[in-house]
Image (cartoon, rainbow, N blue to C red; front, top):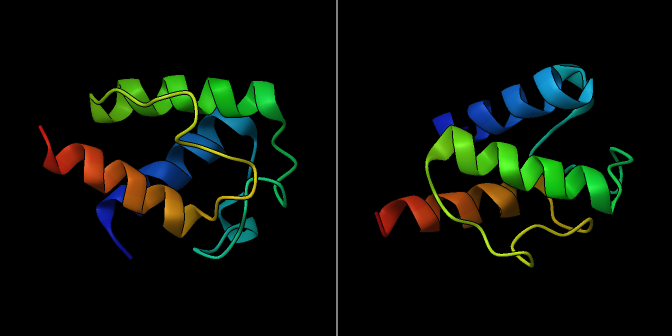
Length: 79
């Protein structure tokens, strides 16, 4: 996939104990058992990793990793 996807997977593996083999672009955060607090932590980690600002409603439990990559890429384009 993209480098954004790879970086997102790295954030999940390093910060949330998710194994790379557990995820695919179609995997949702809900399927990874990330609750609302974990999503807030992921939002903060993504902001640091990508140097972008994310709104509170940019990441949802029902989002797939592919949808999240689209959000991140759209924020990176506006830099």
